[in-house]
Length: 101
Image (cartoon, rainbow, N blue to C red; front, side):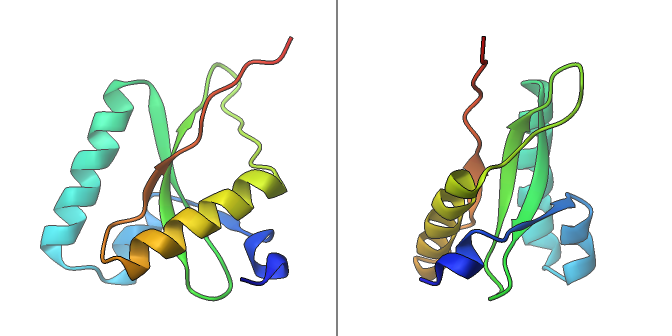
């Protein structure tokens, strides 16, 4: 794993998945996932990396609607997504919500 790649994720809106050209069946699964997360007060975005690794990432976006995904979280998401993709699984991840005093 290249740390340079793992630490440089790009965040995209969920709609980017529709542009990629996934099958209708896969898009239905992704849409169901997004709907389930939406009911729980989460937003689903997409993280992608330069080597083609990607994941759908569930995020808590409270009143301000902003989220920071730091380098450590990007690296962990990258490792998890690569592992899931190589295992034939959809890379559906959730960013743990933390509040800071």
